[in-house]
Length: 305
Image: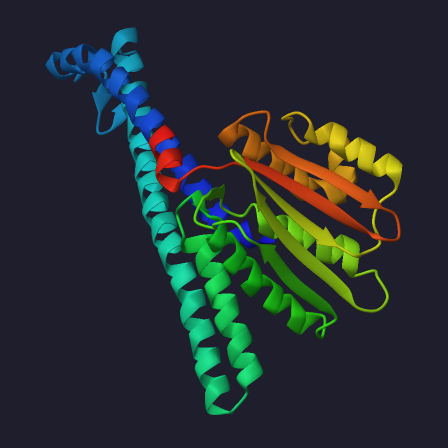
């Protein structure tokens, strides 16, 4: 998912650096405790017969030579540790600056567009800023279905500008939308529908999201009237989606399924194997992707986490 590029890069880098830092300091702490007796012995030892004006004039005891080498390595390690600490500070600062810089820039563009009476550009930058805030700055992994649908509306508005209003978007729902859903569940599926289903279609296209609630499950179906998939492709896709699996080279080659597999894995990890995605498609007519999740309150999911 392209929208996760900034957030994943900075949070991933920071996590790796913090892990390296704590492992490094723990290992070095054990080494320092183990070597403390050696260092004390060296301080009490007279080495004047072996060194003169900073040069070696004799063969020092093996124990002293070994400790001196350790001291040299320790000084180099200390320098490395300082570099890691500085990099952590820099990455943490970057992860805070970049999103704010992006939002401020978009707001400046929007203000200038309003000043120049360019209402369409102002609206698009406003939607884009809100979309990035949802994807990057919203730290919650679980949101409401309403939050997801609002984000899709912003995303679709931006795409409409790119594709010159070739596509329409509609939501059909009679169920309450305050229940829990993993964040960024619907956007990758809608993105798939646009770029793999509608972009290659001649004429106007449409994406529809239908939300149906049963006693204990939500069924959210994202439908498009695009180019569809062959029966063989649908069978292969649903076989992959029946179980939680890691992405492999074969799946990567079939790029249409990458986003669906990732969303499916997240749902199964969060709620269990009985939930996830299912695909129905007719070549030349369109594709339906059904998302099945449990009916759960936000507080229930947070309490289980």
